[in-house]
Picture 1: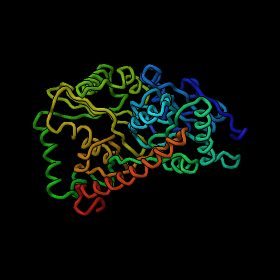
Picture 2: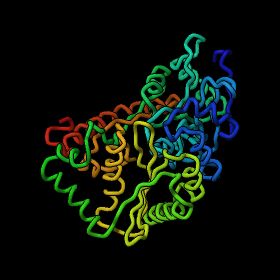
Picture 3: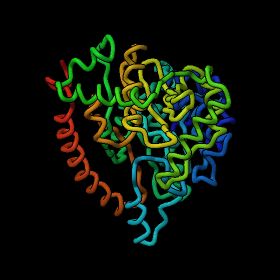
Picture 4: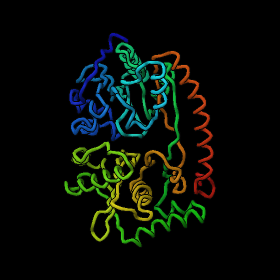
Length: 387
């Protein structure tokens, strides 16, 4: 490590200056100091949930050269890049896979920056140099403390290039994203669909109306505490119905609504005046991110409307270029979402296991590419995704 780049690790994001952090974070919502701080302050992120903060700072607190959300993990939950088989392989060799190091945003499978760089090439700390320094610092710290591995999840292209140059293993997956091609309104968007796919979407939207469900969109500043509590109740109960405890608690919802303003968006579904479902989004200046959903019952087509169609309409209305609705689901294809690759990078301490994982990732990458190619041929557009 260059001695001009002092490195330190921090157990609470509150130890790092919020204004300096946000000055580097820009408007990507999940890297805002308020978002990461809310996770820690409400206990969603803590050693008890498997996330021990170890945030990286290169430079001085008042004038950071680089900042990064770094965690020590004692499990693999809430990551959305699955490495459970890797953990079993470590254990089969009598080695401990956990704790591991994670450069990521908890519970957030959304591509974006994972290191925040100050750009000043004249003084020798341009973005490429600082990203390389960050990866070296993380690997060095992991090795010094006997950690099995370090992982960077849902990384952007600059960090992907830096990780490849540093010898980290790259892994790709396929998610589905929507792209705004200058649509005037939702009907203009549907005009590019084949007739049967267009008819299906219109039928889905009509079924919500036939059930007496109406929608309203509000930002965090427009939500009162009772409504936010109801949104979390719907989210948590839906998680539990599927056999999973929710990662996020009610206090977290209250805090992000209060501190993130227009970047926090909720679509409320009401029936006879009662809130029966809600979809939670975050946004930047260019992208909408679908994150959480909940409903108090089974309503025909409501999930598609609240989580996809309402989000697409929001993007068209506000001129956003892209919509990332979250993980999973070929069902997104019929509604106009297209396959897109997501990337992660992995440093593994054990050379034997690193070789085995590298071979596995080569095979997996081929399968993911084939899957994305097949999926691209199942979009609803008449002439492919571009009109």
